[in-house]
Length: 251
Image (cartoon, rainbow, N blue to C red):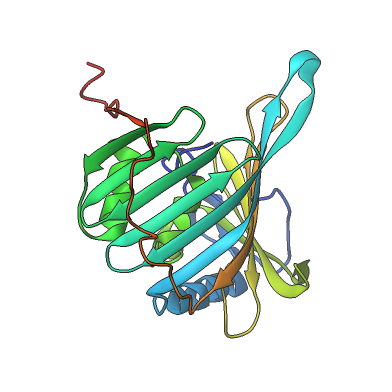
C-alpha cells in the first residue's frame, strides 16, 4: 500500500489538454469547473459526521519477467466524528484492521495475529495525521476522512483539470477530475448532484517501472447505524502485541 505523504490527494492528474483551462502563474492550469466541483465536494463532506465507505481497491504489483498484476482488497471505512474510526481490508486471505478510538490507535493483522497500539490525539483528523507521519501507517484511503481534503487543493500549485461530466461509476453519473503532480497522477470521479462524494480514485506512480496504479471504487452510506463495539479493539486469543517502529526509534 502507499502512504498519504507520498500520494497526497492534491496530486491528481492526467496529461491531457482542454480549451477550457485557465492558465495560472508558472504554467499551472486550473479549470474553473473543476474548482467548483471541489468546492461542492468540500461543502458536502463537512456535513458528514457519520459515514461508512465500502468498496474494492486494486494495487498493482510487478511479478517476474515484468508481469504486472493487480491485488484486490475489500475495504470498509467507518467514521464517527469527532474521534472514532475503523478501517478494514481483506484480500481473501489476510484481514487488516485499523482503529481510532478514545485517543488510541490500534493496527491488527489477522494472519500473523499481531497488533500494535499507540496513544494518539483525540481528534480523528489529527490522529490520522499522526499515524501517517509519525508512525508510518500505510493507508491511502485515509485522505477521504479529511473534511478539508478538497479545500487545500484550491490553494495548490498543481494543474487541476475537468475532463468530463459524462463519466459513469457504478451506474452513477460522475464528474471526472484530474490534477497533475510531479511524482504521481491521480484521477477522481465525483458523484453529480447534491451528494458530491468520491466514487472512484486512481493514483498512478509515473516514474516507477510499468507506472503502477492504486484504484478504489467506493460506495458511501451517509446515515449509517454502527454496530456496538465497532471502534473498540479487543485482542483475539493468542494475539501478540508488538511496537510501532517510529522515525525516532530507527535512529
